[in-house]
Structure formats: C-alpha cells, structure tokens
Image (cartoon, rainbow, N blue to C red; front, side, top):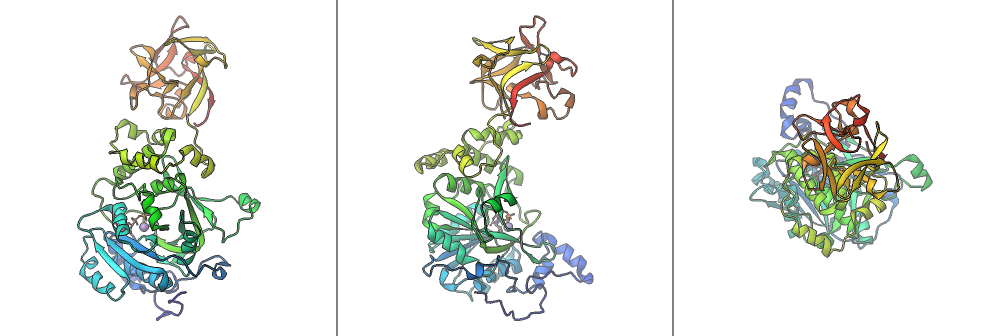
Length: 513
Ligand code: UD2
Ligand code: MN
C-alpha cells in the first residue's frame, strides 16, 4: 500500500527519491541553513513532504503474505528542534505507506524544543490527522526519557519507535508487526536506508548487514561473509538475527517492553540505550531481528543539531559505563580496558541498585551466554595475556612464595607461576596484584581503580616502542621498569633501559595486543 505511487507532481524536486542540486544562485543560502539540522535543510524544504520513493525491497517481499490479525501499533517519534519539512515528511511517510487499520496512533513527543514552528504551528498542521497526537514536554527529557513519556500513554499493542527525519518505504510496517505477532519477545527492526544529507536522495543499502558492536561498545554494521550466506543458503528476504540494534527504529510488544523494565531511566539524553535494550532483550529471553522486507530511510548526520544539557562525550560515556556495570559481568574489564580514561577519572555512573535487581528478577542469562550464543564472532578475551611470566634475560619465571615474589626455574605446571595481564593493566595472580613499593615490588590485594597497580606492556607502550617487551609502571612521575635485582632472586623497579634483557618480560600466551 503506497498512497504516493501517483504523486501530485511527478516533476517536483526530489520526487521518487531523486537527488536534488542547489541552484548556483542559492549556494550561500543553502550553506547558511545547513546547521539548522546538520543536513541540507534548504533542499529538504524544496521537496514535497509527501514525495514518492522507489520501492527498494528485495524481490519477493511484495508477494509475502502476512496474517490479517496483526496487532495494532503506536508510532512514537520524539524530536528536539527538528526541521519542519523533515518532520512532516516523516509523518507523511507513515500515513501514506501504512495500512490505517494497523496504526492506533502516532505520538509526536516534542522534547522541549526551542523552535517556534514546533509549537502552535505544528499542532495546527497535525490537527488534520486525527491519529496524530502531540506531547509537548515541559522540560528537556533527552531522547531516552522522551520515548518513555510517549510509551506510557501509548494504546497500541505494539510500540514502533522512529526518528523524526525518516521516510518509511512501501510495506514497511506489516513485516515488522508480523514478527511481533509470531512471538511477542521478538524485537523487529527495519533495514535502515540512507537519505543523503547533501542531496536528499533516497539510497538503498547492502543487504545481509548485522548490527554489532566493537569495544568499548561502539555500534557498527557488519556484512555477513559471502561464504556463510552460501553455506546457510540465506536469502535476501530472510530475517537476520542481530547482536545489537541501531537504536532508532524498531517495533516491540508494548507489554513486553514494560515487562523488561523499558530503558534504564538512569540513562541520559542520547546514546547507549540501544546497547542496553539489546543486551536486555537477548539475555532475558527475547530476540532482535532485522526484517529485510521492511525499509525505512534515515538522514544520517555528522553531528547532533541540538545542544546537550551536559557535555555530549561525557553523557555517552556515562551511559555506556552504566550499561557495562549492569550487563557485562566479568567482561566489563574489556569495556574499561578499551576506555581506560574512564578508570582514571573515577567516573560516577549513579545508582545501579534497581537495574541490578531487575536483571535478577527477570532471571536473565550471563553476558558469557550472550557472547557464546548471540555474538560468537566478537573478539573478547577476558585477559590480555596469561600463563608464565618469564624474564627474557635470565630465562626464569616469577613465582609467588607465600606472599612474596621470587624468580625460579620456569614450570608451566606450577600454579604459583601463573599470572594474568588484565585489561585494567594489572599483573594479577588470583586476587593479588604486583605493584611497585619504593624501589622494590610487592604483592597486594588488587584494588578497583588503583593506577599504581597498572603496568604498560606491548601495545600499551605506544610512545616508546623500544620498551615493548618491558613492564613499565608510571607510578613514580617518570616511568620505571620491572627488573631483576643483582642477586638474581628479587624483583625491583629501575630506570627503563631498552637494551637491558633483564627488563624484558614475556607472558606464556597473548590473547590481545
Ligand atoms: C542513533 C539512533 C537514534 C538513537 C541514537 C542514540 C538510528 C537511525 N538512530 O543516532 O535513534 O538511538 O543513536 O543512541 O538508529 N532527540 C530527542 N531529545 C534529545 C535528543 C534527541 O527527542 O535530547 C530525538 C531526535 O530529534 C531524533 C531522535 O531523538 O529524532 C534520535 O536522535 P538523533 O537522530 O540525533 O540520533 P542518531 O540518528 O544520530
Ligand atoms: Mn537520527
């Protein structure tokens, strides 16, 4: 169903999703309006708000059947200072390309925008569409809590979240709702296509993409390798299981969303909420899928066109650290190891009691289970190196004798010679850490966030590659290196010397650089 198949003006700029060029006399104007939305606002205003776009679905989608008792959905679109024409185009695309019987309502959540056009003028315009409701928030909630404000008043059995600068393509809604109908714990995402920020053209994207993350929890897309597609005979129209969702566009059963405890309401403004919901869904019994027959265009922008109540980077870091603390179990060291500055600044993530209780109540599985079953291709060694810690010059190994350190003949079977080099940069034997104490070194219970227990080794000695094989401590203002004392029995720290083999160390095995 597509009400725009025969558009009012087939020759209008941008019609059928075509690229538009700014006339040379308008270059300056277009340039000056860019920052209103961090995309080509001038062109957006030229394009019909109900333009047609090409049907980009893979072959076969239009023949697919869905049940005739699909659940109804509430569309929730929240925005702050969105560009007028873009917001309208988003709403029109929903109205033009969704079966009316499936749309319970469209809730626009105005997250305390400062722009005048998003107040009375918007209310006035939308009053022609009885299904569109506008919620003007009285203070800035941030996207996470703004979505929750919309969810709380929603009446549809499914919630469908969208950004406010999208264009839903033909047949986008039915396959999403079909998945939720099949199982209420499925969270269905459309393929996110690209509306060019420069020329406003609607572009399709490669199929077979999964939403993934890399450390320290950066969202990304990853192409399923061709040999896996062939081996498993995956078709273009097949649903793809995703370790994480992009965040902006998805359908979820309303009651299930509340059973899951929604988003962690302690997450601020923007960012990380997609990780949180993804881990929660997978680890607590649900699934996240991309549905290739559902396609929605989105304007990807280089920067947020609105201000952050606090610093943007810090907001996202704090959100991610909250997610790590609640969901990552022992793997949170990988997160902190890849974002080590967070360890150093003793980041305050706020109170986590409720989130931890929720995870218990929902009897969610472990992060290890998630890695093994949902995202087995993620490289996630729990420590950077492990095994014997051998001195290159002496060819002897560090041994723990009672609670003291000594050098002995290496013996892989000796459990007193086993050390881990952790993501938090510690040389750890069980719960004990090697640390400098004056000119000597001692074993002490490892303490959270204690930089004096940190040692640099291999890739971490980035600035002095000639010290790659050393163990460098930065405790004493200038750096010092772990070395063997003159008796060849005791350990100590001394001035780093790249040529001294008694300052070079090697772990039994390395799991990451
Ligand atoms: C992605 C997601 C987005 C969200 C975000 C944060 C897609 C396509 N987009 O970034 O939905 O998950 O990651 O993790 O997957 N907004 C508010 N109040 C705010 C800030 C934003 O209402 O304080 C609105 C904003 O107007 C927009 C939506 O929230 O409609 C998402 O923000 P964005 O478009 O800046 O995020 P995006 O697409 O860069
Ligand atoms: Mn967006």
